[in-house]
Length: 465
Image 1 (cartoon, helix red, strand yellow):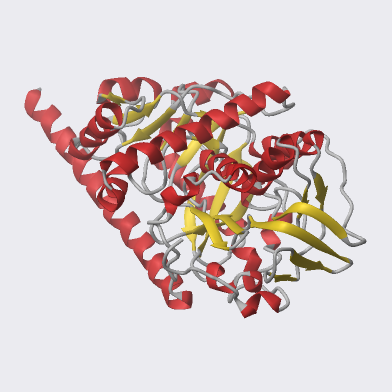
Image 2 (cartoon, one colour):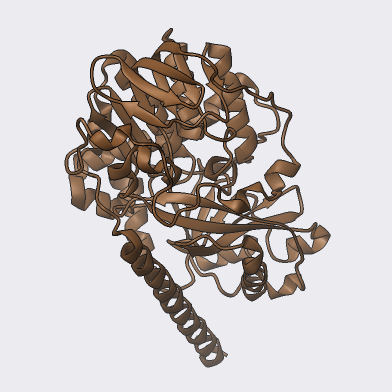
């Protein structure tokens, strides 16, 4: 990685603490979710209690870290993964379960940043991440994951289709991806709302039970030979020398390679990197069973997004419920405060559903980079980073994990494709405040444009009549 390279950082010897203002416990993370209520059984894993020597030490038990551990172990290398709490306790087991190609950063911006040829490679890598998730589920016969392969609809709330047409041309014609443009009539056949106009449909996308996938990935890593320890925080890293040393409360790990596969909670363990991540909490609700009335609003079985930011990402779960996320904040809030707001969002888009009660309400914190691309690469010799997955979907965690594993075991340099997306300071508290204001402004502006589009449509119908 170019800017923000961290070689021989003395701060790695300090005790781990959360980055400023980010809760180290995320109190909302203990709340019941639809995922925890439908989780498959999983073993309890112990803590590190002695010194251990391995080829690779992975810090962080989310999806990226678990993928690294599995792929390193499959290649015959010894690997230990340590997690400060439990496997997938935060974003990896609390997201909406979308598995999509591409990145949070639009491909138009990626092309401008790295050029067309490199952007085409990056798009293919994102598709490989999606394929990895699908093939892993199938190969291991993961219980309780139940992928729904019905695609992803990115719907527009405005009647201006120029941007979406350009996206379809870029991805479908220039980058070689699978994508379709849907007209208004086709969208409203499956999403019966006058709020929606045209859409971009990605047919190879799917959605899954995120927590069960994480637990299945952990089991697959262990089956390949990886050792996983929970409730084992990394307190410090000595990055000097050929053999790196990771200190935990009850033992030390010595490894040739260390992989930092964490979110904002890694804090002082990698302070210069942690400061490049903007913490964003998203709030997720699942409704009580809606029965037959759900079909009055939604018959599309795939994943749906109607914004480029945090509002209104949803899918059908359990046959007749909606899982709906939105209302992002850059400071942690009690998720129950957002229940009425999410209910109001559903009522606004689908008033025909009538009063919608919620059964689960939770949040999770994501780490977002300012350029909206994942952070993948070598920080210093044999110290690797896989982070910054906020807003991408699950595919990038698989992509990053596989890339890092191949870099370690085979010397593969695919990770260098992400060098142009350097580590950039997120601005601290001021940056978080600015991001929150930007989100509010974006939401207000988007709602305004949507209202104008609906007025134009109503006026056109009156004129035509």
